[in-house]
Structure formats: C-alpha cells, structure tokens
Amino acid sequence: MNAPRSSAAPSSVFTDEIVGLSAIYTPGVRVVAWRRDLPEPLTPYAAGLVKRRPSFERACAVYAGQPLAAALDLPGELSEGRAALLADVQQLTQIFADLTGDHQLGLRLRALEGTMCPKWHVDRLRVRLICTYVGPGTEWLEVVDGVEQSPSPRILGLSSSLAPDHRLSPGWVGLFKGASASDDGHDAAVHRSPSVPEGGARLLLTLEGLG
Image (cartoon, rainbow, N blue to C red; front, top):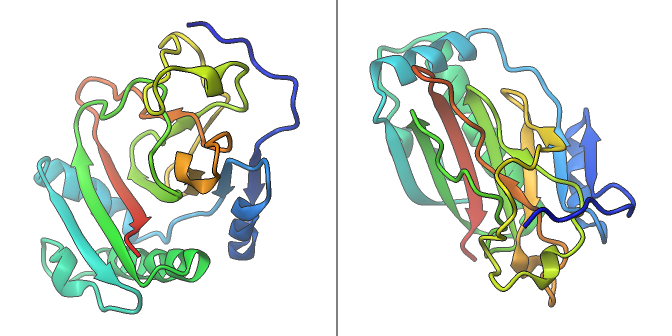
C-alpha cells in the first residue's frame, strides 16, 4: 500500500521546552518532539553500555516518584555518566506521569542491535514516550490518506520504501499518540523503528501508562 501523503495541517509539534510536551493533547497532533541535548557524561556511558552489554534490558512497572536506581540496576562502577543516565530516566518518568496522570508506568530500557519494528504501525495505547540515547531514533509520518481505513489497527500495510517525514535525534523525547487516544483511533501516530547499520546498536527508553 503506497498511500498518498495528506495535504492536511502538520500533525507534529517540535518544541525546545518541557512545557511544549503538553501539545500532545491538542486535537490533530499525533507526535510531539522535545529537542534537547544530553548532558556530556551521559552519552559516552550509554555508548559504552550497549557495547559492553548488547543484550542489556530492564523492563518493569514503576510508580510515579519511585526511585529507579534499584529497578534499573545500571551496570558499571559509580560514574558521572551512570548517574546522568539514571537521573534522566528518573526525570522523564516523572514528566510522563505528570502529563498523563498515570500513577503506574511501564518502563523499558534496552539495547537493540537490530531493527525492532521495521513496518509502519500504530500502537494500541493512549500515548507512549520514546527516547533513543544511542543510535538512530524512531521515524514517523505526517498524516497519510487512507491509513484509517486499513484493515489492521496496528500494522498498516504501508510500503517499507515509504520515506519517513521525521526522525527523532539521539536524546530527543518523543510523545506518540496511540489508537486509544481517541474513540475512532484517527489521531494515532504512524511510526516505525529505524534501520540499524551493520555493527550498530541503539539504547532505547520507552514509557507507557498502566493506570
């Protein structure tokens, strides 16, 4: 399915401030991207983590305001980089909880060597936070005509050759609406995982509400 791009107003919002993330609740907005730079100690630590521990993964349910040091159990000796990654995940967890009103969140931090979800799809939830610390970030499309009529609510049948309109840069925070964000699911963000070059890797954080 090579669906034509829509001429509708852009469904993505880019912001340089945390407060701009609240735009995800604007009707017609499907993705909000917070453009930011990571603190210097974090990047080399994260890169070293995926190199030393290519199968690293932490997946758990956490509560808003809960200290995450034990849950994440980041490897390596105490360092500024390790502390910076922990602090960043802690901050994003609190920001997401404040935005969504969810008291319990599903947190996943994992290293990826391959392409996790290469097909264009939408998620079956209200909203998901995505941040890539290492490697290429999540790709997405603006509104695509005909997507809402797809027989599948998740995998859309769009050609993999369809080029993305946008991609998150490392460190950027993306909020992606899912099919449960509206009664008809028409505001869901169409997105996919990026291709990972041979020998490359990603360190990916995702958050979603559990109630």
